[in-house]
Length: 238
Image 1 (tube, rainbow, N blue to C red):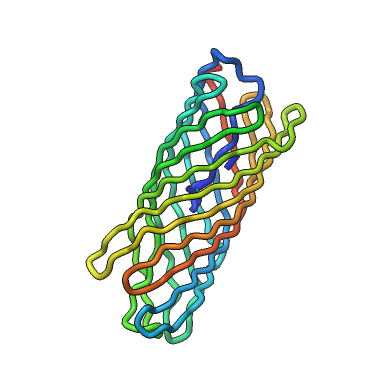
Image 2 (cartoon, helix red, strand yellow):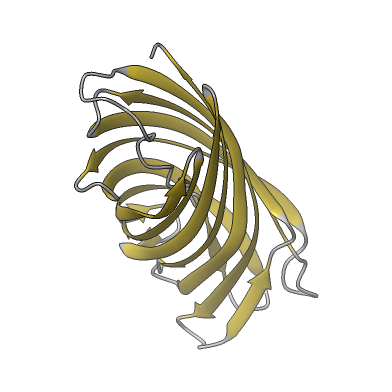
């Protein structure tokens, strides 16, 4: 099951593999890539002017190490890199590509046969707007800590095939730059995942949608993402 952007966006990963015994302990190496669209709605607090900044097809890569301790408990850590490119806004903002880095840790607990609960903490670079007016926009990076919680439910399983749904809430912590303050915000996300196990490997695909709200002292900002996450995992030490 996939997170987070991806948390950004980091995709929320799959639930514990079927057939895991209480005494099982093994490692899981996961590599995923995201393809997603992003729309950023901003509003100048001083003038009240608004702008919608649409992205091209953005992409991200995430590498995750997970440790399955037993049937119910799993921990993980990951590194994530995102590449964002937004469409130019005539006379307001030129086209530019941004590479954003992040990393995180987490814990996943199986509550019932089909229900898991995942806690994630991460630090991810995000884009914010600095401008003297809505006609002079400039994007800047800021490193934002995030905490999120996501229940993951197994909708259907048959043999090596599984279908999962996840629904989560993220808390974005406040930060500060040399020019403005960034306020605390929130992120809501939902996803639908398909996994297919082939011996020690697992193929996964997750479609997701997220809404992120985090304002600064000079701009309000809402970012909406829609994308697909594709990946493969390798279990070893079983």
